[in-house]
Image (cartoon, rainbow, N blue to C red; front, side, top):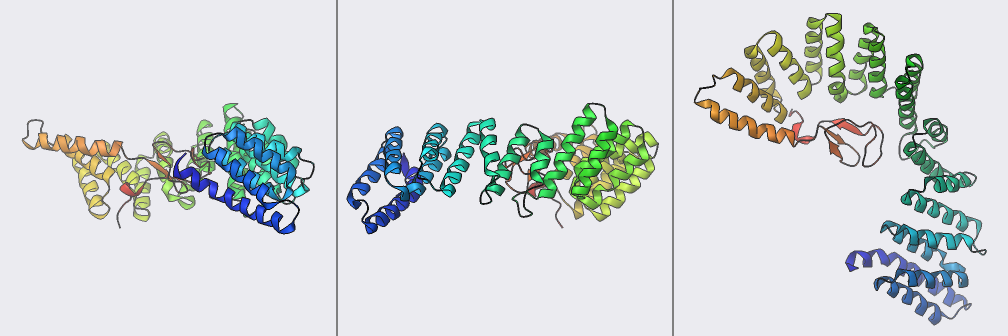
Length: 391
């Protein structure tokens, strides 16, 4: 099994020694007998005979109530290794043991619920965690697990009801959870054509967490559906105060709204204001594209060149090379080298993730309001170190 498993077994061995010493000191059970049995069990695990080890440990549990923690450690060891069926067997046997204290039984229930979660048996896990809501010691952990279950099952109303009972110091801020759960309900309502309810849910999301950019982006899209472009623009202007990094995600909507309102000049002016307040590659490239389209390549390349001298980034350089290649005659001697440099830079840009999670480091090309890796809400932001403007 290697060194990794040996290190994982050390806590079990330590707990075994503690239990052996305690029982030996009390004189209730001969120390040598327990010691031999526990080390036989550990040897079974090392020899890749886990079922024999489980049988032995279960028998010892029936004999010695002081060694329950050893069995918890063993069950968690199996679960961490992906051997969920064995973990379930250990925890089920513990629960069936009549000599367990109430606290020990609830701990065994909690571990069994976690086993079921790992195995994807969400209905069974839900039943156990619902039981544990009556236990003050395990209530907050059970609430957190139930929130995870209802998220996976997309039961957002139930997730909201459970999340409201979480402590303020929960691992994920309660306000953030509630805000995004309301956004999920808003998206469902929008898909069903109920725009009014969707808007109401988005406003509730902002009451829960005023910094939730997602809610304002949804509001803008809903008002655009109604052709209420002024209200849509008002929602989009809130993004700057909420989280300037997400201006990247507001840009397509900003462009569309201004175009439909016939306010192209106002958009350019607004982008310049934003860029002065928040130097950002995405904003600079959006303005560059607009200059190239409305004013010409020379004006666009001149603007971007000035920006890159102050804030050099990989994506900015790639765009600048693209502009230069279009400005050069196709038969110019420098064109071949410029084209090669452009292609190499484009490959680097393509390999650069567009978004990254501040909590776990997950990165990708698309925005996720919930991180696919760590499942945190509102932890993903545009841009990573390779393309952060240098100040």
